[in-house]
Image (cartoon, rainbow, N blue to C red; front, side, top):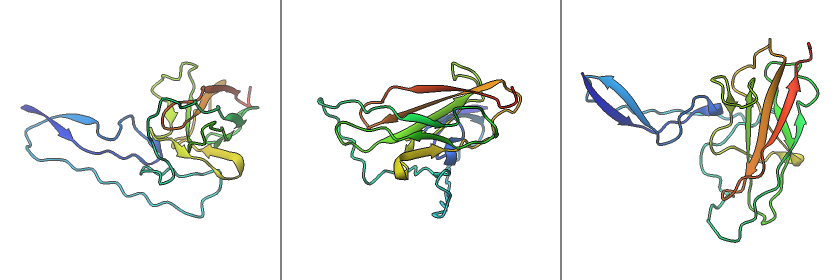
Amino acid sequence: MSRFLVLSTLLFACGAGSRHIGDDIASDGDSDSDVDVDVDVDVDADADADEYAYDAGPDPGRECVPRMDNTPPNAPSPLYPVGCLGELQPAFAVANGSDPDGDVLRYHFRTDWEPSMRSMDQQETPPDGVPEGPAGVTSWRPPRPLFDELPAIYWDAWVDDCIADSEHVVTTVPSCAE
């Protein structure tokens, strides 16, 4: 059997998986054919405000130009969930952060049952994050339900201005059953 590398562009709606655009995929096999991965994403324009679909393409309002005088953005503030976790697939919401330089921000969320946020069950937004939401609030719903038998979950939120990240804001949310 020969070993070959297949280069493909991967796009995961809702951030499922751990591959990034342009990753190499190692595969065993006798085939000499190329593999192309095409994913169509249909975004419902009438989705609820707490169910933001992310746009994996370039953000037309976001210009990523490196510069020496960049000031990192200010972190977002956690809004929900913060008291206790009463549902298995909540929309994690933050009050929007801000950028002293006026750069367009993208929001990043991550959740896990482990405080280090390094378990195999970790869920997070895509590498490009999600666009800023309306009315000063941005949210993200994980693609898979969280575990229902945990005493607590941890979630992390931060923003980036394309040059620098804000501080990460980690929130611990106990289960309502506890």
